[in-house]
Image (cartoon, rainbow, N blue to C red; front, top):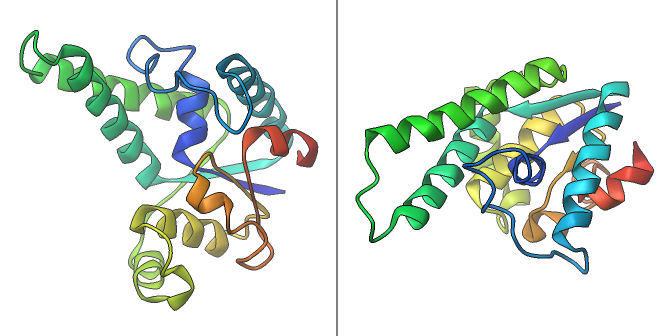
Length: 175
C-alpha cells in the first residue's frame, strides 16, 4: 500500500530525536499527550516498512522552514539568527533526508503537472497551497493513505478519491 507522509508526521517523529526539533511539538493534540503522539509516530514509522511510503520534495522545505522558525524563537532577544543557525536547519533537513532513505521513504518530485493541478483544481479551494501540493502528490502517486497532523487537511478524509487522511493514532489500525 502506498502511504503518503505529510510534514507534520516528521515533526512528531523528530521532536523527540533532535535538539533543533525538540520544541516543534510540545503540546497535546486531539486528546493525545505529547508522549502518546511521539510513541505513535515511532510505531507508525516501524509499520511503514511493510508498505510503500512516499513524501514530496516540498516536505523537506517545510521541515527546514519549521526548524528555522523555531530557532528564531529560541534565539530571539539573545542574538540574531545567523548563518550558523541557518546551517543547523539545513542539517536538520539533511537528517530528514537520510532517515527517509534508511526507511525507504521515496521522495516524489514536485513537477509542473502536480503544481498546476494543485493550483487550478476547484477541489482544493479550502486548502492552503502546501496542503494541495501534498494531496495532489499523493493522488498522482496512487496513495491510499495520507498521514497528516494538519486539522484542516484531516477534514478531507475520504473526500479525494477515497484516500484516507489520518493522524498517526488512526494510522496504527490501517497499517
